Image (tube, rainbow, N blue to C red):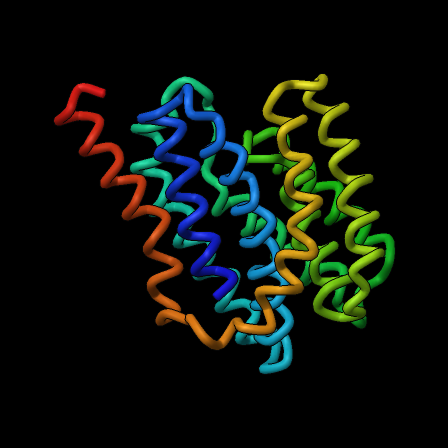
Amino acid sequence: MIKTVACGLMLLDHIGLFFFPTLKVLRIVGRFAMPFFAYGIARGYFYTKQKGSQHVRKYIFQMLLFAVISQIPYLFLFQENGSVNIGFTWFLSLLFLMTINKKNGKMVYKVLITIFLFFCAEISGTEYGVYGVLMPYLMYLYLVIEKAQYKAFMSLTVLWGFYVAQENGSAMALLQVVSIFSIPMVCFLKKYDTKLRLPKPFYYWFYPVHLFVITLVKIYTKY
């Protein structure tokens, strides 16, 4: 259910962005989508990790493939900002999770790889940058492993503070404070997560397909 709700919120966010920019409530509600997806990434990594490293590598490859495919319609809609889509953020986040959780890896290598991943997130212009890469890790640590809502709330608050500072207090960074309050919503929704679960391919394809549809609507309606 959580990923299904996240897809709906993301759709509302993009409808507000491209068709009703003055209707701010759609953008505000849409801020919940990103942390919901971050939790989905964290939980997906947790269950995939239990199946073995081969399945983790497959999961990461699928995320990269999804990101590459999504970049095509993304470029049509976001021509001016020079960034890459959220799929690459999740791809780097999965690599970060795999690096941190590697049992036999030396600490110095983990630190160097982490610095490299953070550098890639910033230099490539991935959506949300390091902030986005770190969020699934915090979800993984405090909601999937420990189930500590208070720690999750506090850690996301600190992370949001760094994000606001990094973005020089931009309006969208300040609006991202909504992500902190996703914690109780995630904890509530996961109780009913099996009630509304669509086939896995749906969640991979929804992002590029809905971007493509929005592109077509913009082209043919001259919006």
